[in-house]
Length: 215
Image (cartoon, rainbow, N blue to C red; front, side, top):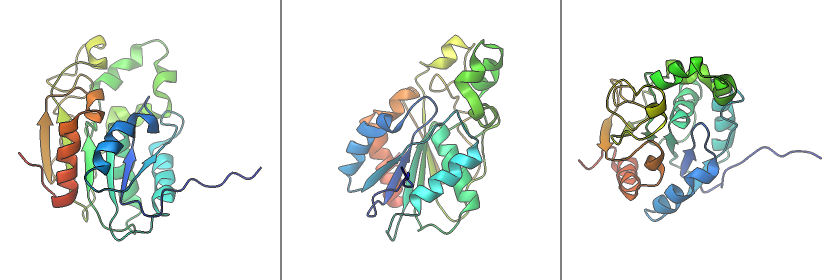
């Protein structure tokens, strides 16, 4: 049986990308909220721990290139944001648009580095380990990129000795910030709740429409 390549809806103008240990299912609530702001959304699913960042970026490009739209925006949660940035650094021929990152470890994650000593962490992180430890800080020059970070410290970091500073419980505020971001906002949510907060959806929609958050 021939397996057809994954495609997004041809009218899609916003693609959502999940993070490690999540799946397209985790983006459902956020997708519904963003649809109310007028976006036509497709959710990209990928086996986060079983291949390299470059491989995921290539798959995302194949997925995104099937959209027939004048503008194409991206939103990525955690590792998903790094997949988007890697794709943009290699495939600049997609329609113009903006990028929103939710709690992405641009500078790498101290929690991921501390997990090296945790039994079974090799299977938990898989091929994503290197990316999560090092981060990915190359922003596209031709796309405005904004980041929403969380400040409620409830998450995996609690069991791994903390996130080396305030943050969302998994990624610290320092790890989720680099020079060159068009705008950045910190909201009182945890790493997982970035996906389910109505405020996050509203501010993300505003950035995608205007290139700025409503501070």
